[in-house]
Image (tube, rainbow, N blue to C red; front, side):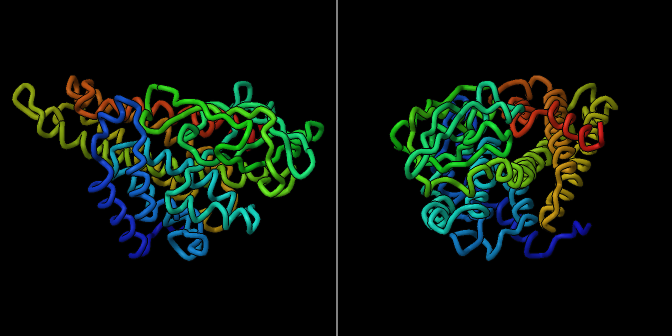
Length: 383
């Protein structure tokens, strides 16, 4: 494994950091308080080229080919420079589980119809997988797609879908053949305003408030054959092929946030005086800082390993599960430590320290809970 970065990759990461710091930090606290998604920031990111990282230049992407290592480094930089943790989550939810599979599995018609507008910021996509009785248990999916002339009738619902309330299209997975289990799941591109397709309002939540979550509902929603993604029954393969990319880059932005969090904690404990000296001189505080650094660097190594494996075209099921578990739990633990380091200052919302804790909690749930990651790891070890 070679984790050394080229000068071009490092320069691009620094460009992303500078862009994020200068363009993406306006009114974050107010938008968080009011659960407001910034379409303006979304379009700024598109103009910079963020949404284009998951598709090649041929279809409006940023680079000639999809470069997973450069994309991971860029998303780390975005998380470091942008204090709005919801925006990187929203971008990743659009790029890797929606854009990438359309590029990898889509027809020429689908690629030409959707990808350029998605990369340019004109269209927003969401990934419709989770249901009321089918979260971690994907095979308990109840949404169905019944074959009819020239297409399918889609019925069912999806919940807790990132970007659903603002989405222009959804990549939805449904059961087309219940007799063959996971090989009976198919993917469909469902466009906004399709008859029988209803999008619910934003659901207020504990953290990540600047990215909207909502429901997708289908009532005899006709989807033409041209909007089926890949072959009938290929849905599970599509889900698996993009899951590792999704986890890698969602977590890359969290790693960047953790680094910023550590730097801010160090600066605070150095200048905060109690009993005639900096509180960083007290062992209980300095130990928390040391633990934050350990969590950051161990998470970084796992992240880079997954990115390297995906860049080599290798499977990273075990490594991605380890990464998801380690980094999401680390961000949560370090966010609590940061509040304790800042004391009352960190507990007050206006100082923008406690927001990281609220945002971090979601990380141990979405894209596979920590419990499921442990189960996956144990299963891969033969248990």
